[in-house]
Image 1 (cartoon, chains in turn cyan, yellow):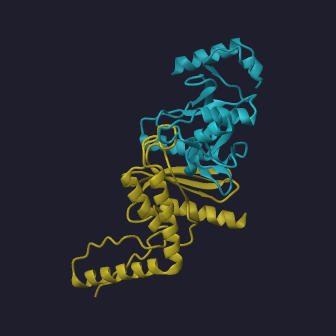
Image 2 (cartoon, one colour; image 1 turned 90 degrees about the vertical axis):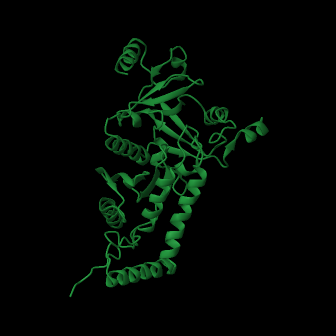
Image 3 (cartoon, chains in turn red, purple; image 1 turned 60 degrees about the vertical axis):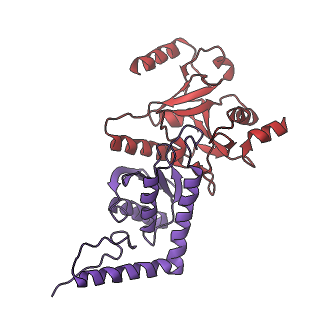
Length: 178
Length: 171
């Protein structure tokens, strides 16, 4: 993990700094670490992860379990409709992936403030990004505590916003629109 | 002559399920009285509706998070034992405490969240062993810890809730 991060950093030093211009990023090879001016979005497939009364994400919306990483999409340079379209492409028939109830727009700066980093890997789809750097400790109690504290911080960060569509998005609805 | 203290509300101020170890007739009689009082309180309109609402939220969650991958990212379903502990936790919440938002973590634990606005928030995860992992913030002050459900809401969590409620009132 350390070597992987080192390699990513070295490569990032050798290419132009990412200033949030999507045109620049097209020339870059994945995986690469996003800059602090970039934005990512987390699709929300479960109603229980959004506090609808205040349109705020709950801490669990950022929970990196079970893969120890947070799956997001790199949204810098995309319009809102393009971001929703990518989200709809992630929908399927398997449990949990049938409906999108919202998305959480996250400036990468907010992740960096929590000592996390966003690595665009384009896997399994273009613009897919993994938020890495979650504490991994031998003591499961301590690890859970720290992760909850990070998720709570993210849920309370005013720069992180929830975008809720007028009605939940489903594959059927997208097909009907098209 | 002996004196017996009936732990009507413990730290939380509400009645936990009784755990009575006395063997004498007097002790058994007191145990029955305590249970009667507890049931009477839970039947009262205010407390019953609060408890029912909290439990209804928990049941909704259990239904939504009942299958592997319910969150779209491979989360485990809510653990039945975590659900039972969360049920007990909600039953024993202080009368003055707001009802929490109910959710689930990806590892199958039940997550309870309170948000009082302006960086005043508490999140608690309840696991299958009764472990409560919590983190809270009150402005720039942050804290976290692990405690265990033992017939009542852990004192550390009651303390956090009281601090946040007080801060929210004066905010």
